[in-house]
Amino acid sequence: MTYSRIAGTGGYLPEKILTNHDLERMVDTSDEWIRTRTGIVQRHIAADNEMASDMALYACRKAMAAGGVAAGDIDLIIVATTTPDMIFPSTACILQDKLGIEDCPAFDVQAVCSGFIYALATADMFIRAGKCRNALVVGTEIYSRILDWTDRGTCVLFGDGAGAVVLTQSDRPGILSSHLHADGGHRKILAVPGSICGGKVEGKPFVMMEGNTVFKFAIKVLEEVVYEALAENTLQVSDIDWLIPHQANIRIILSTAKKLGIPMEKVVATLDKHGNTSAASIPLALDIAVRDGRITRGQHVLLEGVGGGFTWGAVLLRW
Ligand code: ACO
Picture 1: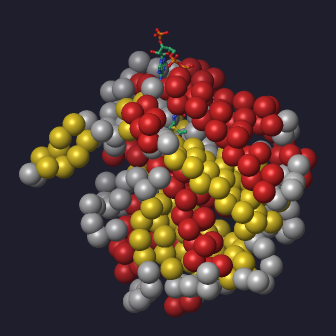
Picture 2 (picture 1 turned 180 degrees about the horizontal axis):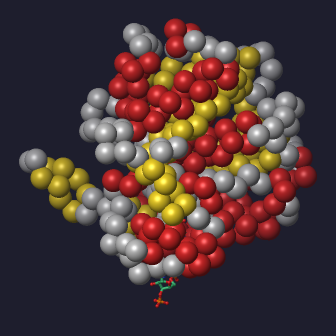
């Protein structure tokens, strides 16, 4: 049997940090409100000349170094992003060029905050089908460019960053199962409802969100998809060594862990340092927990995400 496993991880956060106290000077908010309602303390903001592909490049170089895989060995690139460099070509193709890779399939996945889960599941299927050996799977986002910085309900929540993994062919799993869902009926509760037509932006090119509705929906589906992943692998909640949820809001993470009966000691939460980085949040959290030695070989790691669309999903793996 052919499986896939993560050979290396990498992350990148831009140099500029925007703290809650900085935001107090921009909108009617407070450090106390943001901390208690979201768990976020600071977020990183990309430089004016920095693009999603640049951040992806840094994260990929680290992941390739960690995995001992050279650029010439990469034969698939999937980039999950909601904030691509441009309408086309895809950020994956731009990244491929920056990596100096001349020929391999490269494409973007648009599933908002679930994007990395969608991309990882897709790469796993490519590898198990024998279509590639070493895939770069990346989440990279510059939400600072699609936020209305006068809207305190959304601008305090998000940040910029990138996370990447090298997914490689293996004769042992690796990825045990992946579970993807979408329900476009909920597309209006979280959206950037803008488009380009005739050289002009139509609609609103900023993040719009019904916060409470998103909150409830996220908690419901994040619990359901964990049980779905466990059932497929005949595992129990107690078999999960690490839960790595999408880093949107600490109250969503706490509620999900409590409903599942998973102690917070087994949950990786890094959003205090970088806010919600959408498709980058899960690989960033994974990279931090791998590099600080929390995640060790043989452990069961459950990645789960939820985001605009609405989309949600999980990947269960043995490290
Ligand atoms: N600072 C101070 N006050 C604020 C702020 C702010 N930044 N934002 C909103 N408020 C005010 C509101 O105006 C409201 O005031 P009012 O009572 O006078 O009308 C009050 O705070 C309460 O507002 P709520 O929206 O009810 O606050 P809530 O406790 O629901 O928290 C939040 C809002 C944090 C957005 C929450 O709903 C949430 O986290 N939702 C999930 C959204 C999320 O994480 N989205 C990320 C993208 S989706 C994803 O990644 C899954």
